[in-house]
Image (cartoon, rainbow, N blue to C red; front, side, top):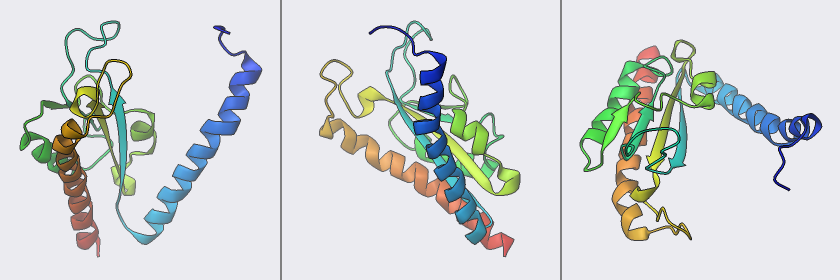
Length: 165
């Protein structure tokens, strides 16, 4: 225990977990693209609000990433930002988090795949201290905001599909 996995174990994990996930994600994006000119990939993560070994200070509540606009159309990002700005939560777009692997790897607006990452700080919906409980009274405040972010992004994608014919 306490040791890093060797090369064989790393390869086993990639083959067992990582590759099937990405095969399924790629397949689903291809399936959706066969039906729609534009689709949305929403990549969401939970993160501690303070990570002193990585960043100074506290992260904004909502961290939106589109690799500086390279992984989604401007209309998609703008819709997400409008929903965040209309909330009481702190937020930033393309700050410390500009898009994780899935966002960067699959986001290709020129090919109709619009990817947005959301890093949401844990205190928006849970306790950051052990036992790391889900806190419904917090979550019910952020859930409608995230819903409006996703809905706004989807509406922007639908508008692009409508104009594509």
